[in-house]
Amino acid sequence: MYAQKAWHDDAFIIGNRAALTALRAAIDQALEQPDGRGVTTEVFAADGEGYTVRVRRLLDEPWAGFWERLAMPYTHAIAADRPSDGALHPSALFAEPYTGTKTPS
Image (cartoon, rainbow, N blue to C red; front, side, top):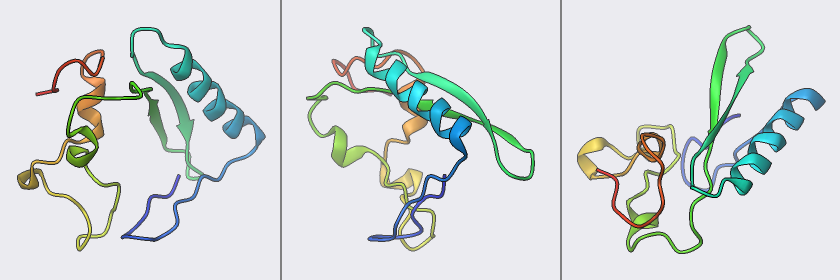
């Protein structure tokens, strides 16, 4: 997975059949979670380093202001949100089951 560097850049998901199937399975599992819990799958980059992909389904109508607070995915310094901006990093959504009924701290 390659994130956007800045606004309007493309993002890329590249993998072999097994990797894309594992990603699809994680997405399918997340769609079926009745309690809003996220799912994870372990993957590896070409250099052999492993990492976790986390997928979570949110409610169709999350709490007010959610999308405006969610940190942007940009990686370049000119576009990236900073913690001081008050942006909600996606990792906060995996700290506990997110139901959309309260604001994560």
